[in-house]
Image (cartoon, rainbow, N blue to C red; front, side, top):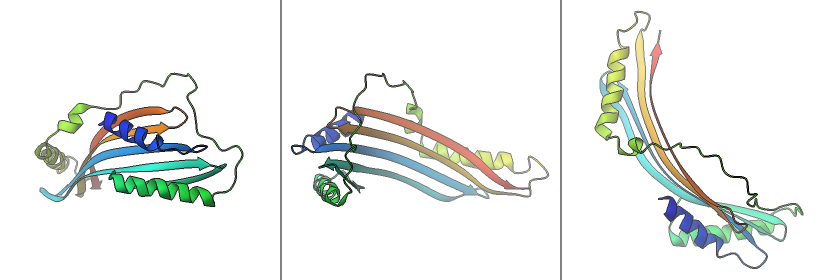
Length: 181
């Protein structure tokens, strides 16, 4: 996934016109949320979102545009919008994109493949199990208002005409109970 996002960022940045700087941020994320109440699934959502943000600097003016799609025609329009928005920006003689400074990036491993492979039925079962464990556990708890399970897996890439080219991925999950005591 990261290689695809970086390659897409490369293609956008390669379209820079003379004197123009471009920065592309390309993202893809999958989120799942489960809410249980009284032993039943109250809601379940799972969605993948993707998009691209493009920043253009031209003639000391900045323009930005975002799209929630990676369709080539949408990307073309987004780049055109960013260029157009730059024509309305205020002149800033100090405006510039970041460039590599030679300092190595901190190595943080924020990705766990098991989040990506954890089955939907197991997510629901985990939320139901927490609700069952919470009910009757403490006499001060009058009601388990909700139990939620959520997870996400995200990938992002940043590419610029100044030589920035990096991608990263992360994942996370939690299960929580909200009680009334």
